[in-house]
Length: 475
Image 1 (cartoon, rainbow, N blue to C red):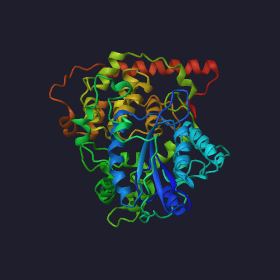
Image 2: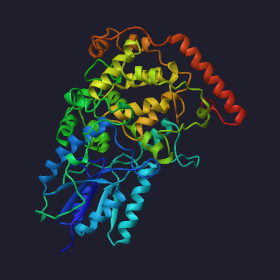
Image 3: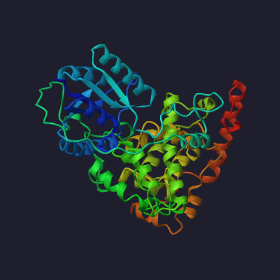
Image 4: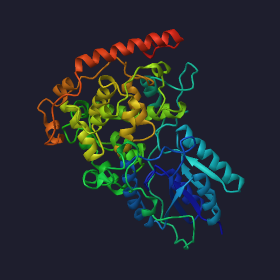
């Protein structure tokens, strides 16, 4: 009798439209699923360690998935450490017939996966990776100019929409009971330590802040994701005009953490939207365009290493930032004295999520008015957003900073007061999220700081020209 198939779960915490799960079930009558809290040093291959809010989401989503997989007689086990140690050992201990997983696209996770696959094959265990985290594989769309990848969204979007998606698959059939196997390298879900304290810039003095805040706004897990998908029309109906109004509860679908952890596949989302009879063509297309921005971020992450720390436009290495921890901390805590920005930072802290219009406004203030490096804000969002992933988070920050591919020009500086007038004219959003003790003494003069930012931008351009570097805004 063949041994069980081993399913290595990562950001695919669902049972519907799960190509790796389906393949594992086809490979063997019994399946064991494993999720690893992967650990790496800064100079090692592997995924970026989860931020604190994402760790909370992962824990709760894994709790839900464990029960869902049990309905199919598929045990979900856990381990902590290096995947290139754990997966080969676990496959050997199980006598696994095959190992299956969904692909990852960042350069460092991809390198680790390739090493694991080679180790398994050396041991005589077939290993298979599958698509499913994105709508299109990053190498499936390439410019007609002969370049390896797209740097501009519009032609990428045009090409990516031509790739057939196929229909979402259903869940697998229940499996036979699997005999209990003693595996010494495993641990319990609680022993993964996903709920222990916070990480990076959130600081050890603020452990487990989500217990009284974030968890009141979300119910992670594949069952809740399925319900959210069934109700997607509420967020897409009127999307063309409402998506920029942060006070409207149904102005967005709030599916981003569901996609980030793979509780839903993007193909499920597209299929649900395009088949809904109650949505207008304009709303449907406006929403799908945003979904393809996610695809574009992963397209860039595949081809461009180091996007979370290094500017994609080399000339920005010469920008004259003014790193200041006191200034950065005031921004993190929503104490800039600018109501619209501080409301956004309060929403982030209390809910683990922020409306996209506010993400742009708060990022612009930090980078271009307060002159703090974009990496400072990227790290804070990584720690506090439930939907932060290795592509969208840094690509979006580099877009605002002007240092990314297809970035907003640096001289596009959001004025948060005008943003509030346009998108929160009656102040409903600000009233909801600003705390009672909020102080309205502005940390920075918006007009003067804008002029200073533009002056430093011109200095950077002059330095780049002297070094022979092309300016990103001259493309």
